[in-house]
Image 1 (cartoon, rainbow, N blue to C red):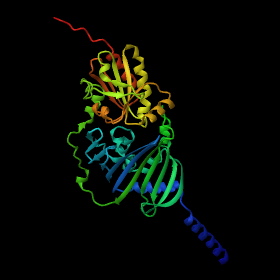
Image 2: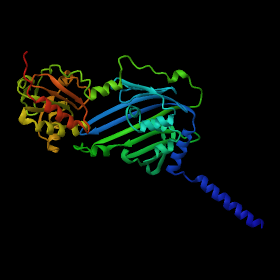
Image 3: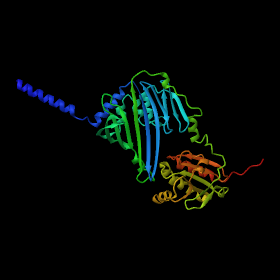
Image 4: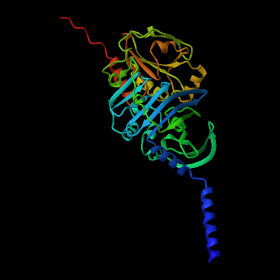
Length: 409
């Protein structure tokens, strides 16, 4: 009996040792990390989000830094401290303020009542979604469920140091967000340290894709501080002077409040075409309606918009509409190659130093400008979306109409 007991005891010990030595799975590591995060009533951290786009010899990078304080159940301060590609979100338990520096606009409304409700609002899009990509995960009391919703094929790839910290390196698929890499701190405080998404597949789906393009979104979470007291001042935010309420900008977008350039004389310009021919604005005034589209080959929305804008303008060619694609600062050979590869035919003007774009107030691209026969700007649009073709068609229909005859009393 004693021998049997000893054998049984040894088998149990061996099984326990084997379980202790077994490396946890990727799913187990992630769940442990995010359950731990969801249990923290108060925490602070610094976040850095970087978007990198490479393609056709171009490299573009946007970086945004945040200071974050979360105090459950209903307070958060996510303050954008560097960069303009992102937004500040502050909820003091009573009021929710969102500030978008790129648009110099803000919203202020009553608090949704809990950080879980706020996390769901972030998921729904709108101004709240402009903050860094993991804000909804930090806000939710069930961060594992939020983060893993579209996650599959998660595996433990390696254990490695990240900025001097021992981490588990996981990899998996994140649905529409593409391939995901995750780094989680080892030990008793299994915190998220970095998440990187490979978004190159999204660029491949563009109407005019960038050959061999790579797009990556990386979020680094650092300087974690758990627990402690919070100061009500942490959740106070003053909107910068000059910022406008978001509803005013939305009204402008719907046409009730026109772009500042609308109604003003179009700035004169003279630019060389891609073929070397000089094009002057004044040569077309009085006879033609002009459509200018400011663009670059590496801009995704530009690549979607150019074929559509040129097509719509072409529908009105027999009624005096001329279209010029005004390239911003790129090499002629690159532009020629882009047109040939994508079988695009329209006149490109080379704004090599961006001076014409500057005179037309170009801050974001694509920017489409419609100039009437009288030389005044009748419409300006920044960006390209699902309703852009219809809107441009309506504006050109209006622009080509002959002026109403003057009446005399």
